[in-house]
Image (cartoon, rainbow, N blue to C red; front, side):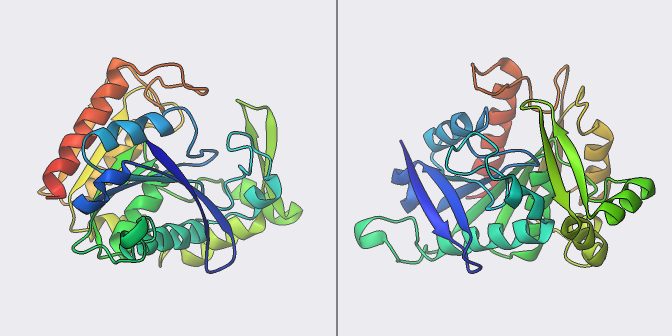
Length: 284
């Protein structure tokens, strides 16, 4: 059973949240799913993974970043003006706030509402760009216990010097959403965020090297959007005594799941099963 919330951030931006497994709030074991670039909580496997992990005993939070471009429709990119203004720093800040409100008891009903979670055990699952956001957040937030990345990127700066020059000249960069055929604009604020914070709060290499928490890296061998090399780079940076690396054969960026969701498959079930077992052992 799922439940929807609208959370207003400290910056007065709306975050749409769907939680699963409310009965599991008392276990203090919470998983937060972080979607990627051009992703959203209701995309493809989102609701399915929420129900799956709730059935395994976790309280699961899925959400849309305030500037991911998806508004009231929940499935269409109907807020492209917000998408254009999104930055990595904004996403880090918003994920941090979601973690904070969980710990403060925001999602509890009745007597539990507003009662802080005692001894919270929090795991982050990040897909694609969300994997990088999850890693950076886990490094910055001591309350996070462990992390799983699915098809995660290893670098935030993914643009050539020529692209950046054009970006600065025009003040924006456009990317094509091949699924919806929409041209989606990225304002100069994203490039400035990358360049101003690459050695600080957006330093992914430093975050992984100094994470000091259990990490599970899962990646499809045939991922064309984010090559397996990026998963190998994250593993190279990681503490091998705390890290597991699973390569899924003959599958790509979304483990053969499509949107709209049709059905699961053996490869994605493997991803979910290993993810569940990892959190069962690291969130005790």
